Image (cartoon, rainbow over all chains, first blue to last red; front, side, top):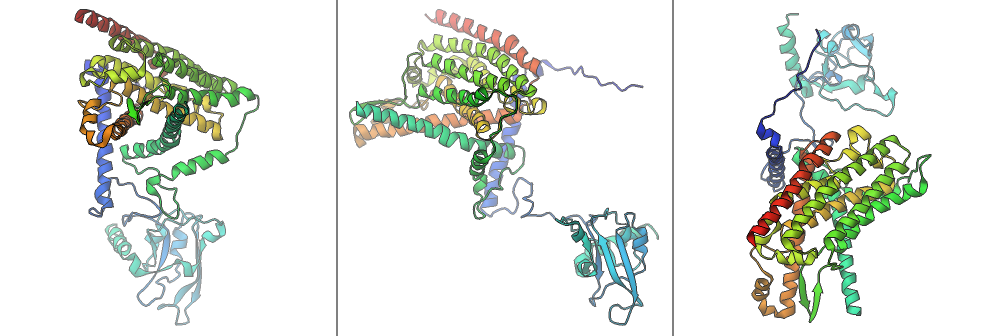
Amino acid sequence: MAYTVNRNVKLTLWERIYLPEIIRGMYITTRHFFINLFGFVPFFLGQKKHREIFTVYYPEETVKYPVAYRGRPVLALNENNLPNCVACGLCEIACPAYCIDIIPAENTGKQNEVERWPKEFTIDYAVCIFCGNCEEACPEEAIFMSDDCEISMLDRSKMKYNLEQLLVPIDQLKDRVEFTRKMYAKWNY
Amino acid sequence: MFVDFLITLVKILFIFGVTVGFFAPVLTWVERKQSAIMQDRIGANRADILGFTAFGLFHIIADALKMFTKEDFIPRGANKALHTLSPIVALIPALITFAVIPFGGVYTLFGKEVNLVISDLDVGLLFIFAVASIATYGYVIAGWSSNNNWSLLGSIRVAAQMISYEVTMGLTIIGILMVYGTMRLTEIGAIQEDFWRWGIFLQPVGFFLFFAASIAENKRIPFDAPEAESELVAGYFTEYSGLKFGMFFMAEFVEMVTIGAIVTLLFFGGWNLPFVTMDGILSMFDFLGETGANIIALLIHVGVFFAKVCFFIFFQMIVRWTLPRFRYDQIMKLGWKILLPLSLANILITGAVILALE
């Protein structure tokens, strides 16, 4: 059945006179103008921390993203400054875009606390779709989605991050670690 | 003789400086910033000199530099001569109208009478309308000479809109003439020294009609069908770039100042403060001597006049950022079926009241 739109909007006499409604509209915009104009004053005098206008001057100011935000995936360094990753390859398999590339190697005793460690771990952010499947697949709490989304480059080859570039101290990821524990525990894996 | 020449030169430079040097560039900034603040945004703040942005005021300089350095493009198949001529034809009349607009009364400075109007024509009001209508040719020629369908449609709309609203404007002026009995703008201003003889009290309907018609004449939203961005790209100046586009842009802003000045002069007492007469100011500053008191009066009056003009520019900006664009048929309907009969009725009632009072 065809969908019809009723365009015969019945206007009251007050609306059809037109001028009062125009004045009402102009009253609203003028009110916004003055509220915002004088909302600036306490901010510039330092009495208020925030402006009335909540638009952000982007490069100078940034907002804190919510913890569920999926930025670029990073690898976690544990408290002993060693990577948590054991190069099991589950994230590589889980990745729907095939952007993760792992070459595992045997631990000689200094790289890691377990038997295996990733000799090479590359994520191509030009290919990554930021789905978070790698984080979900990881059994060792080694890979996490950070809140960093500013990863534009002038060169496509620079979008490939190696192990050294990917490692981030786990202190910076605390909120996300907590979030993932809560999230995936609820789903009963 | 030489002093007269000097005084006129100073007046011309003053008006030129205020309109082209101050209002036109600053209004580009005001329009952006005011619209932004009205819409809960921040607005222009990127252009900076050594990290100092001054609320985005440097965007004026950036805009000017951009316009000067842009390629002046003339499309293939365009009529070169007319394409170059039309921005000039559009801009010059907007500036010429200021020749007859008084921005102050008559003052005695050093024993010499100084009238703060460049040319005190006794048909000043008619002169303004005659000259302002010439600008329409600029817009029509611009659209025709560009060899572009959008431009042509835009200029056709300009022509139709101008014809429709010029009628209303002219008829509204008749009401003013009947009330004041003069076309000399300095006299109209002088009559309004009495607060209760301001045009807004004598011609309240005339004010609304005149203001609506003059916004339509300036082709600003809600009457911007000739340059409707979403329909006609940019209307009649689609094919213009660089300084020629800048001239169209400037013409629009100068016309805004003109409208503000004329509305102030005809309906809001010109340079007069309510309840404060010229003699009152002169006697209050009597201790400064005749010339000193006159200078004080001059400064107050010019300040008041431009404050009123600024208010009406602000008002036009609010209208521009509040109302959506009329459809083309709605513009014609409003012009011919509502404003024209209203202006005729305004004349009838004004005449009847004047007759009854006599």
